[in-house]
Length: 350
Ligand SMILES: *Cc1c(COP(=O)(O)O)cnc(C)c1O
Image 1: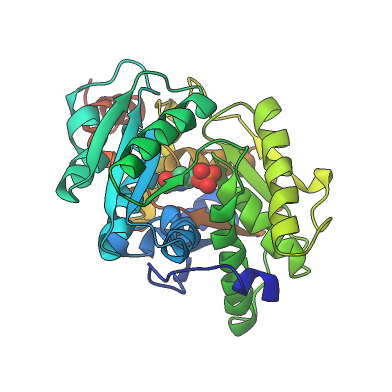
Image 2: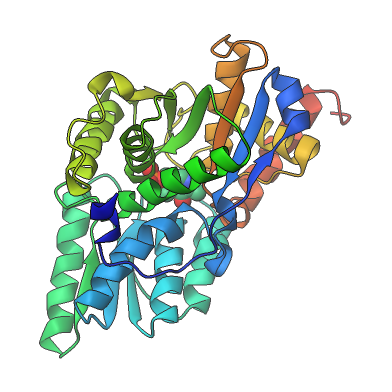
């Protein structure tokens, strides 16, 4: 992995993150459940984006940038983490917030990650479209050239797939870290389950594992778009990441497995399976999951376990990618869903 270590990188988070067991939740699902705690990467509530930003900000520092620009959903964890990272490096941060989720309320617009963006002193702007990645990137580029005209040195973190997947290198690092932890604990996994959104986490982890000779099946749970669109996106990213680290061809098309069984009604929108998984995690393990990513991913894992995807006692690894501030951006939605869930389960009078 010499090629990996040649990329500019700044250390932003706590690592290695813990590799924990979740015995009660595992017993409920008839598997040996392990959790890679990337919600514990530290910096400003942490999460998977801290891993990705180590490489983006590494590039920004190498270019002697003084201003970072990024785009994302209103409750984006990526933009909050980018703001935190920029601050620790003494840089300015411009965040473009896209309207990606329909029918949102005040807590979505004011609390959770948005509140943290403001506390971190980010310059916020809004972008009316949530489903056009190249348009969102173009709008960031326009702002970057305005800032450059004023004498700033901007660095843009792009959203679209027509830019190199630098962030995925953070999950090649995680694959290496995990491999060391497995060796220390004399442990192997039968299956890995991870959220699949921009696909940087999924592709980086998959490429990293394969490059290290680990053939464990990895299932990406679709949180952003349906499987038919996500699968080619993940594969494209895998090929690019493999090329970046000099391991072309280490991932085949068959290695890319995604499931969109718990995506409906869409990105950032709740469903029964997700609230059930969030309640199960919290009540059995005090394991906090978020409504947009990790709650859905755990719901996907639960659906796989109940649907017979894992043999009894299989060792299953859940990647906890963080996202916890969004709980407070979804306060009302979560309370309503939780109440309905508890009533349906007979835990509260109707
Ligand atoms: C962004 C995000 C994901 C998805 O990661 P990608 O690299 O975009 O696929 C998963 N979990 C959380 C908490 C996130 O913020």
